[in-house]
Length: 346
Image (tube, rainbow, N blue to C red; front, side):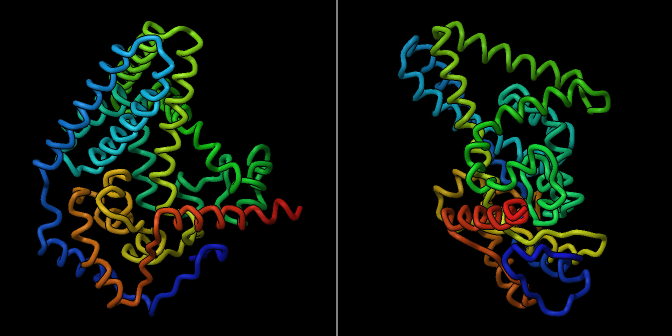
């Protein structure tokens, strides 16, 4: 295993056997934290469903007014919360079996948000299997951004230019994340091989038709364009800010030698401190370590799992990373600035 040295230093004691995770799983099972939370998710579905209906009803009622820019922000938050719910569904936190998970995931993801549920689930599953692995984790592949100095040295084209200043460009680029999500979804359904491709394509098309019809029917063309740009920019920034604190600036892995499952998940993840507001805003992703160890655990149980995991990591001598929200962004940005040094030096 090779760990990128620009990330925070990580220390562990001598590697233990695979039974380390088994013991943690036994403690989590004993606390009943892997049990489903139907009441919690029923309430969450109801609240988000109400927010969608009230949000678009308010949009129609306000009419052709520049106050719609406020609604653009409000609906962007609703879209992001729908995406976070789709994330939980994909991890089988809501339903135990595949079929209801696919139905709910496609309705919320494709129809509600405008992303391909199947494409995103495949990408996210590969991330969970190999977090922060430079060759295997799609979230740290050197596309426009680079995540290690080795990637920076090998960067070509746009990534080579952007990598020099990516710490400064990161948040501006997040304004395009929603558009990237839509584009990737459309590209996925146009290629053979995606399970349920026809239904996904139909639901995606329905999302775009309904969204654009509503916006251009209620608003004048200029205001409609302004609404769409602001709505999608805020949606992208919200999503990016929900996921960015979790792994950016943590050690990256290269090569075939990897730590055991428990250490691989813990040492590459960072939790974000906060209270109930942070939990709701980030959809439970602020408990990233617990989520990576137990992806199917309902997010409402993650705060209860945290002290168990912290205590166990302390017993093993495994570093457990945690930071405040603003601090976590600062760590990520410092890391991004550091990995771009070879490009600036060149």
